[in-house]
Length: 214
Ligand code: AMP
Image (cartoon, rainbow, N blue to C red; front, top):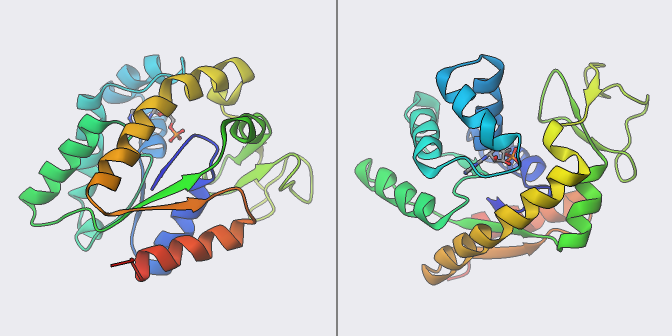
């Protein structure tokens, strides 16, 4: 899944993964878990993440490669937030080729920049599960500050602060478009309009991955 921060790709990737019975592998979630556990990789990555920058490719590829080596990903995975640069896309092809695999499809959740800024600024996430995401305006929880699903506290990500949000988009959008081009050139890319109702976007993505255009 390819998409800008705030495009809703995390929510969509988690829905698709559940429907397809595949693990949802989100590089951002993996980094945050390393940061919480204060692993050496987590400490190195934190410096970049706090500034809204991309973590260097070498660290990121290693992170995802280790995750894909786990048994639950043997039949495949929904990758979310990776690859985010052209060298990462090339590294992914190489590591999948070593296991006789390939990128079966690339899905681009397309949302325009102004809309991304608004979405990120109002985002609240559940402390118990990063899959439970709310928005002040478009998806408020029933009780302010509490998750509808498990009642846990909601928080705003450090890198969702307005200054960092702009930096994230400035730094991350150009390489993301290179990834879109990379998969377009290989005829595996489907772009879906992400500026719609969340269920409509899920249906469009599900159709794209289960009935790829020939
Ligand atoms: P996300 O939760 O996907 O927005 O990721 C949070 C942060 O983790 C990003 O702003 C980057 O700093 C870092 N990150 C996540 N995935 C990648 C990636 N594929 N390449 C480089 N940095 C990444």
